[in-house]
Image (tube, rainbow, N blue to C red; front, side, top):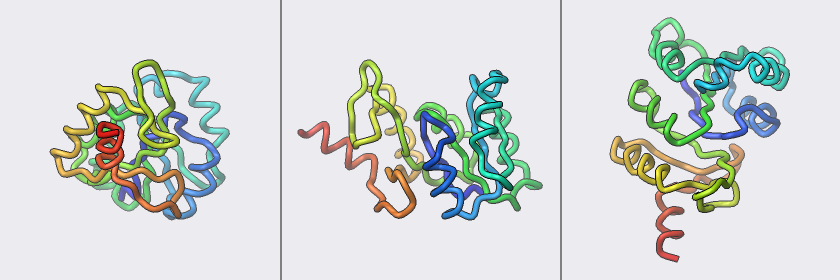
Length: 162
C-alpha cells in the first residue's frame, strides 16, 4: 500500500528518513526517477542515507508503475518519492492507487515562483497541477507529518491574486 506519494527534489534526506518514514510506518521506500535509476553513484549515496531496516528501491518511472501495480507488492507500506510535478502526473496516470500527492520540496529555479517557503513552481508545473486536480488528486503541502495540510491550489490562487 502506498502510504504517501511525495514530491521532493532532494529525494532522500533527513526530514524524510527521520520524520516521514517512522510516522507512516513505512517498510519500503521507492525513489522513482529516470535519471537516478541510471546513475550508480546517486544510487550508492541514496542507499547510504536510508534508515536501517527499510527496503530502498530506485526505479525508473515506468518500472515504479509496474512495481506499484503488481498485486504481490500490495502488502508493503510504501513511501514513494519523486522529484517533480511532471513525474507525479505520469505516475498518477499509470497507478490508480495514488489519490494524493504531498509537495515537500521544490527548490527555486529559473522561471519558478515560490508558493510556500519550500515550494517553487513553474508555469509548466501549474499546467500539470491543473491536470492532477482534474483527475481528482488531492495536492497538499507539508514539510513534516505534524504540519497542517495546505492545499496546493489555494497557495497558487493566493500567489496569482497577490
